[in-house]
Image (cartoon, rainbow, N blue to C red; front, side):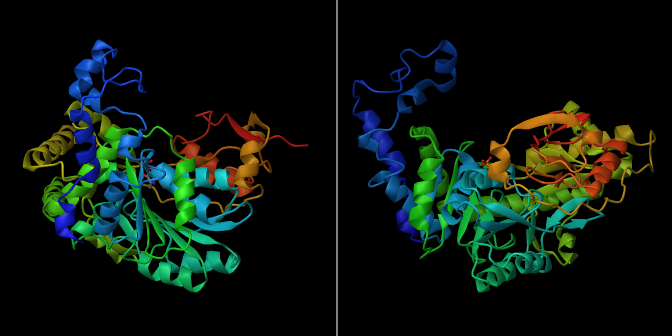
Length: 488
Ligand SMILES: Cc1ncc(COP(=O)(O)O)c(C=O)c1O
């Protein structure tokens, strides 16, 4: 990394220089620097409205960059060790769609984890690619998916040696990092591209105690939500291609396809600014977050009835490393599930990132400090003390059911275009699903778009419903009916 160059923020400098010119605007956006904005917007955004500029030649074009944006993206590539980096104003969602569109044509196979983010299905629908699923390992004690391991990758490749690419989620939402380096090496040896959904990993290169970043593990392309953990505005992400990646131009074209032609300059400026901050202070900021998370975890594990797993998760074969800034707090020792805990935490003024099964996930980022860490621990302690004695000793933990083996019978793009209908779930055996049904835990779909509703799928779903779990995904949240593809 060229530290001297990283001190610059070329896009911000260009934006500010343009604003200083005080031009009279005869272009979009129509509020003209805020003059016609509502009082609410003026109060909220103030002077920033003058920086709300549409696509204009004076400030470079995201999709044909030649000036300050090109330079800003080059600096991001330099920071992350990429051959080329693209800014996204449509999150990692667009980056994932773009990388799939770049490597897959209609009818190509792509190997993916079963619990891949919905944007992966979006990429399949857009490209016409067909999924081949890798089986994920599940941690019974922690009740989280660990993602696939080398064995599950090898099984998927043996079943579909003609696949074009493999896509990994690395690390998972819960901070679990699989053995990406060995899996990427194996996939490359089989002639496949390696794509990574690194939405939760933009901070990885800045602390040696965190899992190794995806590019360093051999990824061809990796998509990172800069906004999630590294300080840019919500909706902004980066897509990195490794040096000499042969499809970089196709990625560039695909990024233009899946994003607005009017990217917001605030968003682009926030990416430039976050990149500079990371380059200059990333090691310190991310290092602090890791230390703080360790303290929080240690304090939480000292509270009766709570459990937050740490690096011991790496004892599972499928896990190569763990991101300690992800603090999963299991409340089952208090006889509570995640939803109940989330509600009580909210009453204590604490909002968690997500809840699943018996746990809630709290993120410790570079935005935290001793005080916010104390607030989280205090809230958890109050919840635990309030609960103690009521249902002490009760545990909600139940062994996970074996997941049905997916049977993809209609490619996602075809399923997306098909006529669909809602039928009673009880009568859906043998039909092809037009929607995805997932329960948390394990957060892995029971059935997905274009897949047959087999007897195993029905048994699994019925059992999950009987245990009181609510499905995620179907239009009918009670699953009285399920959307299927019309026959005939
Ligand atoms: C694993 C994973 N991949 C991709 C995404 C999409 O990222 P974005 O919200 O930046 O579009 C998310 C969002 O939560 C995610 O959790």
